[in-house]
Image 1 (cartoon, rainbow, N blue to C red):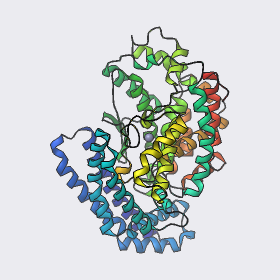
Image 2: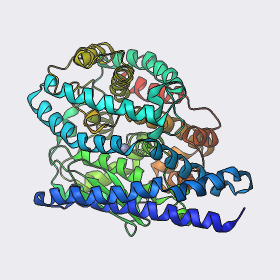
Image 3: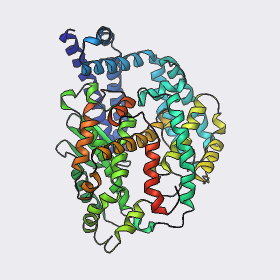
Image 4: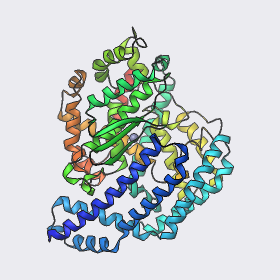
Length: 502
Ligand code: ZN
C-alpha cells in the first residue's frame, strides 16, 4: 500500500482534529472565563468553526481516499487500519445526513434548550412537550438518514458507543434491573445507617482546592500537560495534544462533592493524557467511546475513591488538609458516610448503587418514545411510575422528575446508556486488574496509585480507537461485557457495610 496515501489521510485527519480542538478551546473558555456579554458572538464563532469542521469531514477528497485505503486494508498496519475504519465511518455518517436537517437540528437546539430551562423552573412539562416532540422527530429523521440494521435507536447509540446496539444493551440492562431493585430496597430498609452529617462539614474553598489539586497530582495528572479550573458543572476537555483541562466546583458546606468530583474528572483526564503521543490527531489517538471514558472516571471515583484501601492511606492526609473539620472523626464512620446509599430524585447526585436505576428509567423511556410506543404526553406518568417501581420514591413535581436532565433538549438521544456501560465496563476491568495485580489493595493502602494508573495506561489508554469498545473490554478482561462483575462488586461491598443479605 502506498505510504503516500496513508500520509495524506493522516494530514487530513490532523486538520479535522485541530479544528475540533479549536472548538474545545472556545467551549472551555465559555464555561470557565467568558463574561456573559461574550455569549452571542461566541455562538457565531463556534458555528463558523463547526461548519469548517463539517466540510472537512464530508469532503469528497477524503471520501475517495478512505474508500481507496479501505479496499486495500489487509495490506495496512493494524494502526492504519483502525484510522481508516474510523475516518471512513465518520465520513459516511456525516455525508448521509442532509445539510438542511443538520441545520434544522442546530437551529432547534438553542430554542428547545431555552424552553427546557423555563419549563424546569416552572415545573411545567406541557410547555416543553412540543419541543420534545420536535426534537425526537428530527432525531428520527437523522437516524433514518444514517440507516440501521435492526433498530432505529441503534443509529444514534452507535455515535456515542460504536458497535453498541439495542439487541446487546437490552439483556445487560434487564439483568441489572432484576439484580439492583431488590438490593436498593434492602438497603433502604437496612438497620445500619451512616452518619450523613459528616458529608456536610464546612471546609473553606482554598482548603478544598489545595487538596483537590494534590489529589489529582497523586493520581498522576500531569499539570504541565493540563490544568484545573472552576465551572458550574465539572467536566474534562482536551484542548490540544498536551493540553487536557479539568474543572471542578466548590461548595463550602459540601466538601466531599469537590473531592469526588476531582477524582472523577481526573479519571477522564488520565485516559486523555495516556494516549500515545505518536497518534495525536488520528483516531488511534482518541478515546474510543463515552462508555469506556466513563469506565475510567468511575473506577477512580468509586472503586478506588470510595474504597477502604484508599482511605487507609488518604484519610490522615484529608484530616490534616481540612483541619479542623474532620478532627477526631472515626475513620470507619467517615468511610461509611462516603458510601451513603439513599434513593433520591436527582441522577447527578445519586450514589453508586442507585445510579444505574436512574439511567434505566431514562433508557427505557427514551427507547419507547423514539420507537413511537410511548407518547410525549404520557412521559411524566411513565417516569414517575418507574421511579416508584425501581427506587421506591415518587417525584413531587416534574422539575425533580422528567425535566431534570439537559440531554433531550440538546438532542442527545442514545447518550444515557453510556453512563451505565461505563459502570459495567469499569467493574469488569477493575476485576481484571485485581486478578493480575493480587496485592493491588495493599499498594493503594500504601498510597501507591501509580501501579493502577500504569496498568490502565498500558491496557486501555494508549490504545485509543484500536478496537471497538466491546472488543477492548474482551481484549483487556478476556470476557464479553457482562453486568455480573458490577453486581458482585456491589454485593461484596454494600452487603457487609449495611448488614444486609445482598
Ligand atoms: Zn464522567
